[in-house]
Amino acid sequence: MVSGLINANPIIYEKKERRTRTAPTAIQDEDIKDPEHPYSLEELKVITEEAVEVDDQRNYVRITFTPTVEHCSMATIIGLCLRVKLMRSLPSRYKVDIRVAPGSHATEAAVNKQLNDKERVAAALENPNLLDMVDECLAPSYY
Amino acid sequence: MELKEIQRLEGHTDRVWSLDWNPATGHDGIPLVFASCSGDKTVRIWEQNLSSGLWACKAVLEETHTRTVRSCAWSPSGKILATGSFDATTAIWENVGGDFECVSTLEGHENEVKSVCWNASGTLLATCSRDKSVWIWEVLPGNEFECVSVLQGHAQDVKMVKWHPTEDILFSCSYDNNIKVWADEGDSDDWQCVQTLGEPNNGHTSTVWALSFNASGDKMVSCSDDLTVKVWGTENTEIQSGGGFAPWRHLCTLTGYHDRTIFSVHWSREGIFASGAADDAIRLFVDDNESQVDGPLYKLLLKKEKAHDMEVNFVQWSPGEKPLLASASDDGTIKVWELIS
Figure 1 (cartoon, each protein chain N blue to C red):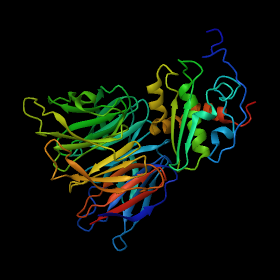
Figure 2 (figure 1 turned 90 degrees about the horizontal axis):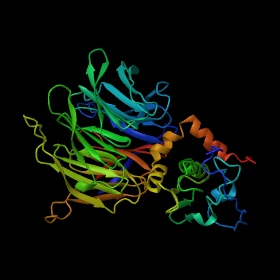
Figure 3 (figure 1 turned 120 degrees about the vertical axis):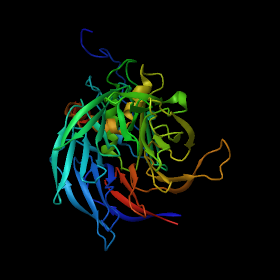
Figure 4 (figure 1 turned 180 degrees about the horizontal axis):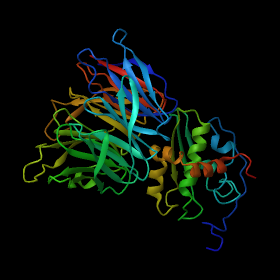
């Protein structure tokens, strides 16, 4: 690949007007930057409003994201960003599951398993390089 | 039956991953002691006050591990504490006149050490890691530890190692969904995998987080991300002369009791096993004497919803005449519980 990017030419979508929700809207309130492009995950349609399911009664949140390409090696980083974002924004009583959209990734089961293993997540967040990448994606002023 | 909270212990500043009761305490007038370890990189030693019956933090073991301390284990004599950390090392601590000194650091794993465990005689220490390996260390005089075997066999991180309560047989469970049984069938540190308990043997279908043995050592319970608890049994726990190994087989699967990952199980000497899970709950199970042939062999004794404000990472029964249950949680606290009938 000449550019060295996983997806050199991503499609950029217009940001949707957000509807008001009573549920926690951590994911929607602020944009999360794509790890390799100067666009938000929403602009790349990696994450959409419909992909955030909130069950307030059960204190449960499920996020389904769609990597831009099937072999996206950034999928675990994106998932980690989503998890950290929720850890930092949501009250701790919420249980969070994060997954790639069914059929959207070549190693879907492996990515999902890793993103939901809290020991692996904890260890990843003690890795300074990974934490820097996550923090960069979550920085409020990336553009 | 009721699981009554005796005390809620605060002190750790991050999630509490694990704890271990000191096996040499809780009898002959010696106050119960346990160690706990946390994402705050420290280990805390808690001691019971015999008059109040409550625990207080006696020591904080810090500035040795540089990352999360994931696991801790007292030697059978209760004199030495081993701690495994995400910093890839295992530290050995000795109680010198009430102060805990780090007397040895075991290096070798490539990355996170996830679990440490002493054998019944305290002569061997097992450690396991995200590097997929299990190491067996021999305890030599003068706080020296020599690695006698590196066991490769798991395809993914090894979550926990556990020695059989009476025999030198080692059990490991993994992110690869398997439990492996390791034995030294010769006599020259020739450790081999003698059995793999996986999906084809009615085993788990996702990460196996923990396992525990009953008092006699002929039954074992395991718990998993597949939301089940499984009980396994063997006919004969001893290693036969001539290298015959009595295999373990699946006895029953308990399903539908937790609705998030089950991180911990522990079997009491009285035959009650406890489970702790990501649904913040603790469950207790007992032998079901009235079970039908082929029916479930264990039944739910008690459920404690909202045992903690967040996920329950670890449960363990104390030594002593009247076992208490301790639990460790993501909420940063440890709770001590009494089972009242």
